[in-house]
Image 1: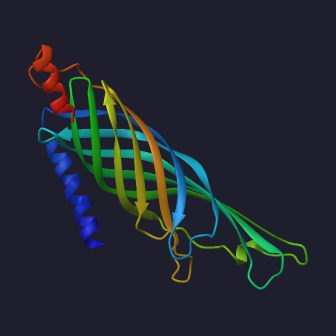
Image 2: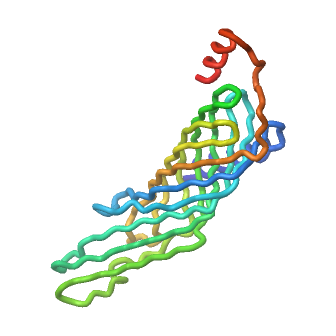
Image 3: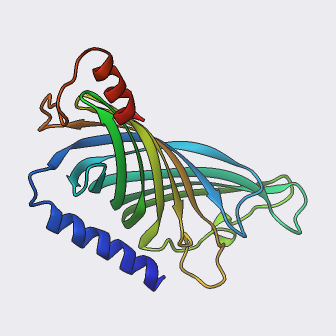
Length: 234
């Protein structure tokens, strides 16, 4: 855990320092997500619920194909599942949970391309602070009345952290990508609570405000130019 925190702080510090370079780009980013669960106590079956994320990003290039990117997002994760209540025949409880976070992803990005078309791959970490929590728990049985909170009344951790990996394409100021977030912290506080974490698939789109139609390398024409473009694109 200490190594992971050091990794996040190091990347963040580097991004802040490198943000004073001339290769700083910035813009807005939004995404839709599908939230799943994993861990020793994950539900046997659950419904992947849709959520969303949106905010700002800063990207600072420090090498020909490398940059560091930091984001500040509002993020919502939703999930739902139903399970049988042990020792009670034909009894079940249902959980619907919504958690809102302020998230800070910090990643290293490798990007290649030429003029208006680029592809990228990024890897890094994300720290999130819980801002709002909502949970609806219902229980039902044909034979008796059940207090639903007895079976699911855990307190949610006030922060979350994990790893983030993504890939995508940039065409002029528009970037479209897929990312996958894996939480490394259990959702709930108590020692005897269920141990499970997020696994989230995101489809994101971003827009760069200070985009110019640059030619980062000397423009070359004809067959020589085509070879140069293919070389730098891949």
